[in-house]
Length: 246
Image 1 (tube, rainbow, N blue to C red):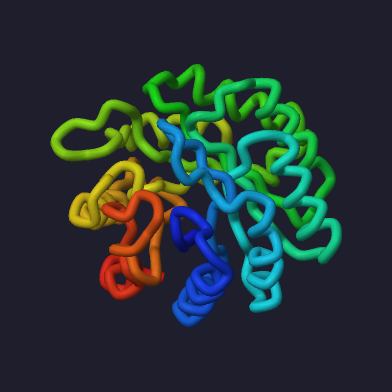
Image 2: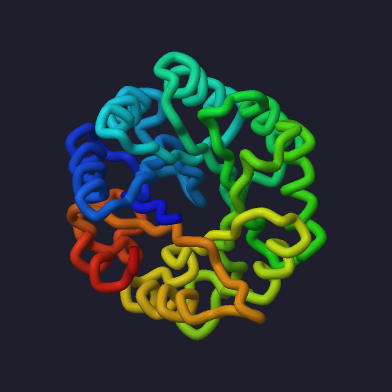
């Protein structure tokens, strides 16, 4: 599974250009976050104004993916894309979202929606029990683990030039204990394009007894140097072509 696209949705033209470039490469799920959690007050996403852009992505035969910060975000996206259009959509719970009630309620919003997948990223600190607990809360809300996908985005603080440190072994333990697919997010591990490419290579080569990651969730921008968020870690589509095997 490959999920690729810009860190944040910035404009209709940027989202649609990304979707077209993804489709040309056989990428079926396009990420573009409408809501962005930020460390300090700054651009935090186009928010609900961008849902119509995601609706247009579905018209290209692709599945849009976006982070949701709370139940209201999730309801708006699910109601308009899965409910209103009857199209597939992926929503994800980011690493900073550690309110168990919100996690559970997002699972409840996805419950029974066959067009909805919920992706869960790990928390910022390394703790196996906490990571498994997040999964339990979401599954408790949705009642259907088949809707759930997991994603390892590393743990803070990063060392050796990385933004966040990977723990491939812990990720495989979570995958084994939950029985759920596990993607890797090299963008938030790497922090710079050079490091992102290194993490992709490591992830592609990694396996324990023949078991490894089930795909990538990666930030790719039509023009990374002009990105509004995380521009240092977003690949160009040419760099994506060189690094990712589909």
